[in-house]
Image (cartoon, rainbow, N blue to C red):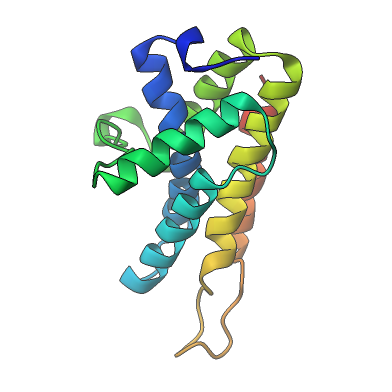
Length: 161
């Protein structure tokens, strides 16, 4: 059983923000308007506080995100893709892959796989949260082609470790 104490403070901060970074990947892939961005962010936050399985590591992360939200702290504090680091989408994918590598190095294979599935679920939740394109909702797609491509890349980033 892997817990917070198995990681450095920096590693833990990256792990805690990873489900939200996964949601950010979707917003970067197909930026809509402010309403769509808010819906995607809320879906990622919901996913970050409701892990899809009961591994202790996932529960610890979810509790930390919940506590931060209740204290009006931003779990993404200290993380922002930069203009010097290449395209933002690539930076987010690299971060997700790196975090999955940290978890894989210290957690059991089952916990690491569950964490990766959680990141994909967070990205999927963000993609499903708001329709893209169209006019006033007419002709819009639930998940755009660019969002689907990013979902596939997120899945690859967290399973390639």
